[in-house]
Length: 309
Image (cartoon, rainbow, N blue to C red; front, side, top):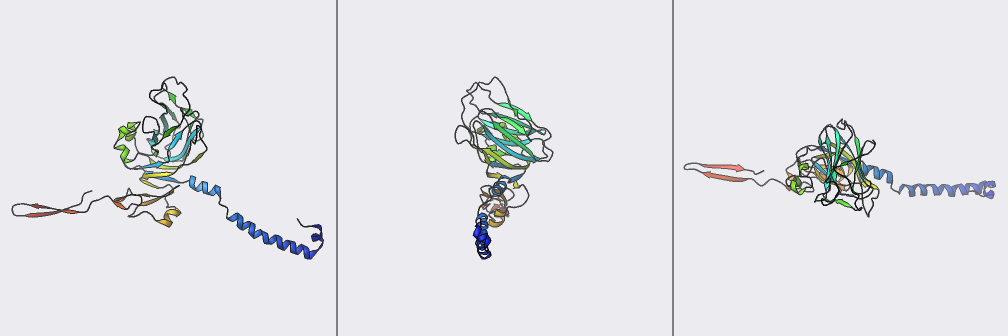
């Protein structure tokens, strides 16, 4: 604020204005150095993948732990009425499975031990017409750490029906350590279905569609914290959900031999399924070198070049 003396003296007023104007660029420059948390969160939260539904396609996101007030949400888009949407288990008997069945979302889960008096698993079906090619939002929530309720597109949540009367257990944390598989399972798990809490999940149809904005809460203690974007950790048969490579992919170009680069929260991920290579950057060849088989008959020598697949 200008003093009364400066206000009556034109030279003093000019000097004060000059000093004030000199401060403005410094303030603007200092503000420009501050990152925009809204933009950063939006760009990370909106990343997604397009799954082609092939025999090897799947996406693996960060593990999810279930405790009181835990939650998980995602958006999906497909025209496929029946397919696996989400599966995770704890390598033993606890699991969460979401499947599209004739355009409706079916939630099946078990979060208690087999020796418990609680039901072995619970089942509910919500929503309808979810295979219309539009984006739909699914949210799972656990009010107490051993039950789940599901909601679709903001509709009232539906609680899965138990097979028998539920006795309330002591609150704890269920860690689904396999990771959250979306749209399918990796080949290694499909070859060993008995290692899964639900072996039949290996036979579910793979998702031909898109998934984005996958978020889940974490359980640092006995209660869940706020939801945060989950990281895409692995997958096959994927493309960026918008069909374009991210700036990071265009800058680093990490994928070799025609591999497709997919943007993830933890950095670029190489999709090698359409190549004859594997590895983090599609650098490991899957085919063996050609060799010659020589077949000798009584009067003829036959040479045959063979390349194993």
